[in-house]
Length: 483
Image (cartoon, rainbow, N blue to C red; front, side):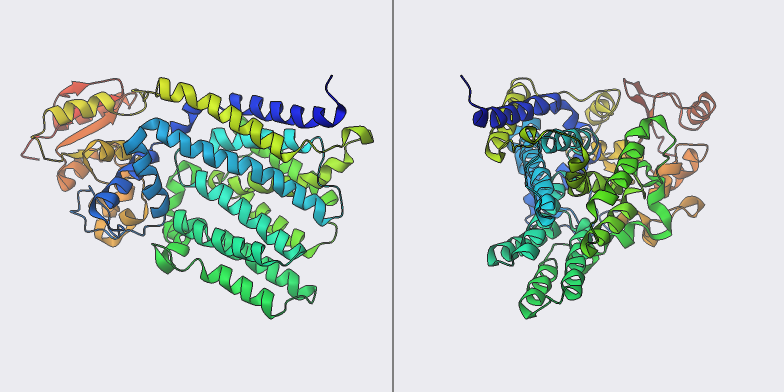
């Protein structure tokens, strides 16, 4: 018969396994940016250097590029080369394991900061629920799958250091700072802001001695030796200039009235409900609340931070749930870790047995097959395609007007017809202006997606002739030499 002490860890492990099995592995491939990440990583490995210019474009590698995601790309590319898509899932699974354990630890540290017992029976179910949302919406073969757990674990080390300033926690903070700057440089500013909050907290508590000051300075300095340098650390100011980023859906302001954003609205309301329970007149908690609230309502991309740090605030709110004392036991982190690992291993088997196939209606798979079959060997065709598909075209062997790296394509060197940058032509171009863009940029082929306006499509046929190929994704126009 199972004793009561063993029942809670077993329940925690089984719950963790069940939650992981609900996180379908095939969803981790559904992002067009993954393809250009793979190609940039492959190119850097092949040439043995970090990239500081855009590659495979209409511009003969003349556009400058800030390598703000180089660490992620250099890890992703060899995994794909060795194992294919299952290699990507292995990285995703490892990061998901680290994230869930980090979110759980984040809630436990939050409770300990306020003198509560670390464990609470509702903490694990809450963390797993949050993790499911994060997985399905953000874990899609992009740098945030690595930077998210790194930021969470940095925050944990920071709070542990503030509670008990030991050298191990200080070293962990410095290491995590360097790792975030190397893997996903553009989000490193979050590390700097959290460090500044902790320094201000120490100053207000009259605990900012020379040792703490030195540790905080080392954390900040650890971000400097990154592939993108200072420009990489300040990358957010590059992509938001002239509001170019607002042309991308995930950067647009949140519309809380939309049904598909109902979970985000509920998160915001829940976040507001937790604050009276969790702030406890602690300056640091107020600082974090302000920062997370600011990021959480900006756009879908930055809303991720509210999901990451809601356990820090909600962990205390759980005390408001009326539960008998016998139900407040800790489930055991070791058992939970074993349960997560078991679930991830079970998910990994089918991925290796039957690697997922791309949905041909979402990517120009058949269309690029045709283009490459009719292109001389060793030649990269110039392919004009939409912003969302250009990463795949680049990955398959074509040169593109603009890929998912926004920053090279908003430079003055890329300005063309209509006074638009290459990024703007990519976003606005599949319209009545497409013939003008083709006449200026001289692609070899144009790929347009199915479902385009009939009026526009007729105009493109008049300008380019009948499509030479039609596939599941769209139509391929061969551009006449006189264009």
